[in-house]
Length: 460
Image 1 (cartoon, rainbow, N blue to C red):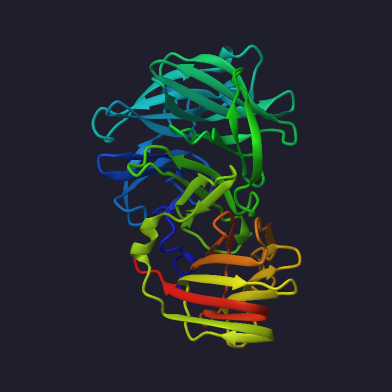
Image 2: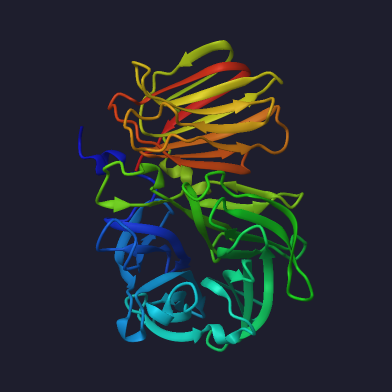
């Protein structure tokens, strides 16, 4: 076996050059580049010593690593620079983030919000303290992850937290990013003890009437709501769902680009390494999901799909075929670990089929994406995904929306990452650790009335 770190390292999903990575932070289009920041420990591949890593790209897929943007400032009482966002104040890049230290500066009750401004094209950042918990009438615990946008000449900020034992998102207003006023509670969810990494995406246009999209991470599946902010400053949800059926151990803490030149909202999530579960892969930890274009359909429900730039890194189809299955298996000639598998199916009520990936010729290893028409569910089955004992072999399941007679799956394989888009609406993300070098096969098995499969290679 080759070095495990490189054997499993994703190629077209963003990873740090080394060390630990968790939440994506502050996506921003600036000076002709897409910039991404991320929670980063440059000193090791475990959590701690949190900095802001930094990279940029012309096309959302080819990334250039840049020097670290933010490091903890001991003179300010900082041990960590937690998550936040980035905006342009005129032509000046500005980061807003949560500053955390030790003792009375601890993350649970002593977090402080900081602004960092760059006047030299992101070469350096000057920090200013802008918010602490005294702004509230009653303390907010686990208060972190500022997300900022501008509407009608005024800046708005939301932060996640916990109050009275349940999750909340608080809201603030400012004319200049420095002087903030508390504007009350935007949203509460009593099903969770805290909410973190909130995003609010205004979707009102001249005639859209669609309100906005609220995202947050409650320690489990990332939640989305579409709805409106009422006259009292409260968000009223009209539709709700799960952004990615992967739980805390799959896809978490997304952050959204707000100033895309094409007017899109593009989000990335953190693909965790929890599924390793002690499997000895070292040197780096964490990946980002593919960029996801977020929008609402005519009914006000979430759509998420890869951006148009994805086509620039995909080959012509290597193999494509249409067929039906009656309890049989159809094997493909194409093999690999850097692929897109696009499946379209017209399904009968009794259809139940699996797209098998990372399949070994001996049959001892494979992972399966299974669709059951009777329940309308898509399941990532990992029971045979690896011969190693450590990696998690739990399943991840999502429910399709809309017409269950039609299925459209985009399955992306990238070494240890599998990312699945379902009908352009739901998603499942997972980590897979096959041990056999020959575990690269693809097949479809089960019952399917009519199915079309197209396979393309990712070329970086």
